[in-house]
Image (cartoon, rainbow, N blue to C red; front, side, top):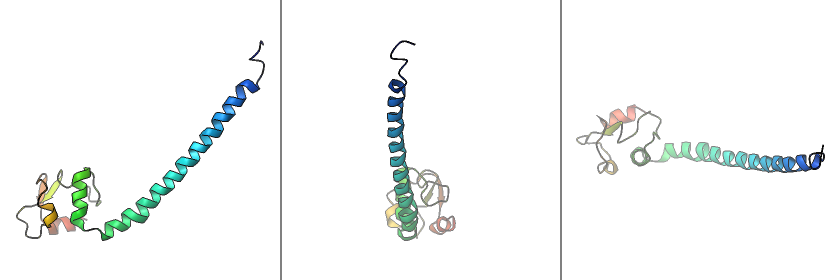
Length: 110
């Protein structure tokens, strides 16, 4: 074969460099995953036990995702009824969209 195709090093050397770079990227991703897992299990699960439930619902509404594990998103799927005497003050300014429930019903859904 004519040069450069006859020199195998011209083909394999760049490929080896790419493989080394990919190994570095794989290592970086593994490190990021470990940090994410630590934050999730070591901080979020701990936080769910100590953060007021109403604050969690405000975050559900603002982020549009279920944070308390009941499968519902506050302000989209349900809300605490405006006439509920136990409704936490921080929820009073949020929209009343979705199925209404009492504070007691909500706590029972967790």
